[in-house]
Length: 368
Image: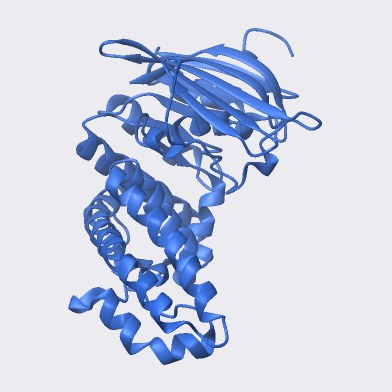
């Protein structure tokens, strides 16, 4: 599956765009602040029904506008599939597939798998475990609708449980009822994350070796309160008094984390910026590999600002790997069109180039 055409209306600073793509590699060029990342985010939004860069739709709209509309036409083995997303400032969101609305927006997740790498990925290394759980959730949800439903349900029930724990006195019978409803969802989340982390680990190391030349050993370690055969019911029972004192749920899968290690030490403490960038790209390549294997469908691969903290030689090797390898459609953004043309042109003649200027997207042969 690949994105043949996108029509954008009032998405961030991209007021209007109608663009037809190459099924292989698409290069989006332009100066910083012109809208390259926003345009790439529109492609991501069509797959995930949310922005890669924000957890809220508040910043989705062009300034002064009240509705964003995205329309994508995708080439498939059986023909063309159309996806339309409409987001309004009052919070209403609709997603239609071939002119038929989904009953739930979340039903669309995984229909068009996507993997995006961006300079903002550094938060996966430097920020709290919440970012790494979000990464796992976005990955697994595209492969497993049961997991998506479980993680959403667990989140809703967790908020209810925390609200009950803040009450004085705590309503124990109601607390037990909510807790019991969480057990099954918690197990589904734990099993999904544990399996995903296991599949990511070896692949991340393999891709890191390809990118960096195998100079360091990298590893992923999944940490969970449920490790070692523990159960959610056991955790909740053991921490009941503590939870009441603290006013929130102190143990459970909401505390899961994914540790990134390099030569036995945390990546955030012992690696250079270039090593961190290489690690994050390797992680996303591993995500791509797992998703493709699980779904039997190549995700769309989005590289935002690929040259950030990587030298041209390493970028050229990476582009050659994804173009010549068993990858699907690829999007790359860069500020230097000549540099990107030189690299891509030396590998394939299937590249298509676009220029973004003041939020307007055109074939690079046209002037802004």
